[in-house]
Image (cartoon, rainbow, N blue to C red; front, top):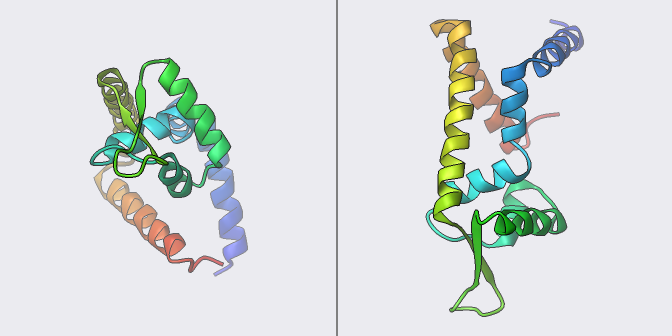
Amino acid sequence: MNYTELAAELLRGMFALSKSRPHKQVNRSMQGEPLVLQYIALQEGAVLPSEISSTMGISSARIAATLNSLESKGLITRRIDLSDRRRILVDLTPDGRVQAEKHYQMVLKNVAGMLSALGEHDAKEYVRIVGRLSTIIANNNCK
């Protein structure tokens, strides 16, 4: 099997897919403020900005700017950690939770629509393969 030719075919398909409206909406949800809101929403309580930065691979300066913006919009709160006054804890406001959930439902609808267009068998295979690739990448087994 020629993996270079297969990779070129995959890249062509990914390029065409990247221009589609549902895919663009999903991509936008996986960056910036929506991604930070979603990350905080999935945690079981307040989080540290450094935790967001390291988990998401985003610079601390970018996280600080994003948190400033989210705070000015009333979507998050920041407070001093009473157990260690040097740390700042970030949590969602009720409006932030509503916004995160609304955004998640929109993305979920778009992805479900794309998977539905594939059909049951291909959709399950796609999800399986993406899961396998994410495991391989997480274990640094990708060359």
